[in-house]
Amino acid sequence: MPTVPSILGFGAIAIDDIVYVDQPLSAGKGKVLQSVRAFGGNVATALAAVARLGGSAGFVGWLGSAADDAVLCDLVANGVETAFAPRHPDARPVRSRITVGSDGERFIAYDDEAMLGTAPDFPDEVLSRATVLIVDGYAIRSMDVVARARDLGLAILGDIEWSAGPATERLIALCDHLILPLGFARTATGRRSPAEMLDALWSPSRSAVVLTDGGRGVYYRGHDETGLWHLPSHRVAVIDSTGAGDCFHGAYAHALARGADTAGRVAFAAGAAALSITGRGGREALPTADEVTKLLSSTNAPSAVELKYAQGDTGT
Image 1 (cartoon, rainbow, N blue to C red):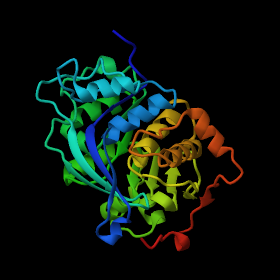
Image 2 (cartoon, rainbow, N blue to C red; image 1 turned 90 degrees about the vertical axis):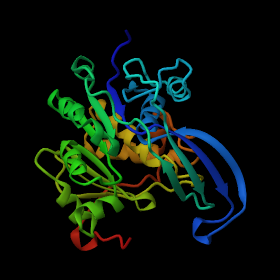
Image 3 (cartoon, rainbow, N blue to C red; image 1 turned 120 degrees about the horizontal axis):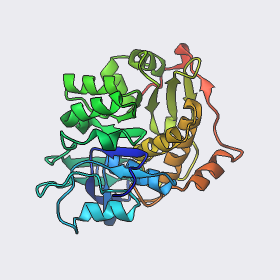
């Protein structure tokens, strides 16, 4: 049996049919430039990012039982361990259709009637040998496993983009590293400014709360930080923003597993996500650790600034 990776994850794994058009999505219509099929999914892409960065990653959600299962083979090809994933003949990926505009923005239509989460009896013996567990909103289907992982001392990194009501609230409470899109954080908290959202999402059990806001950067608070912080975005040529948030989560987990503090984890993740949008699809431009380090050391790399309540509203 192989060694248990330091970073495990379960959640969405997808096959994406992506169409690139010659107009921004706001134009309403445009000419098709290219159509491609690619593998994606929040947690699957995050784990592929970990592997690309040089970390050890393992997918432990449901996979098909066939040895030539397409998503299984893709994970293996991307350096993600699958030996500990439960298998079921009915397991299949989420299917997504993504339209990407000329400005890199995208619209995702998905069919998530699939087996998501993981086996309810997933063994503590495997969980206890890891250090980080990445989960997305579908982990509400395996809440007991998340709770057991938290009790075993794993850092729970939550990538939550939508709410299913009280179950999602319970999942959010289990995540000590909570990384949310700013739009969902606004909906979940009812607050308007990033500073107010960070405060509303904070609790003594949190290690960090991070809000991602695309081209406007990242807002964060950590238990090892004083105050609230805003890290502006890197200026890169945007080709396709698909998977940028997933890459952010994977890079954050990689930095966390290596002992970086909150500011270091956020800076590393933001740099990796910026590089990921310079290629097509969610996987084409996943960076190496050396590429991220080079970007962070460039003269025009942004620096974090303390976030003030009076300046906190992005107006989005």
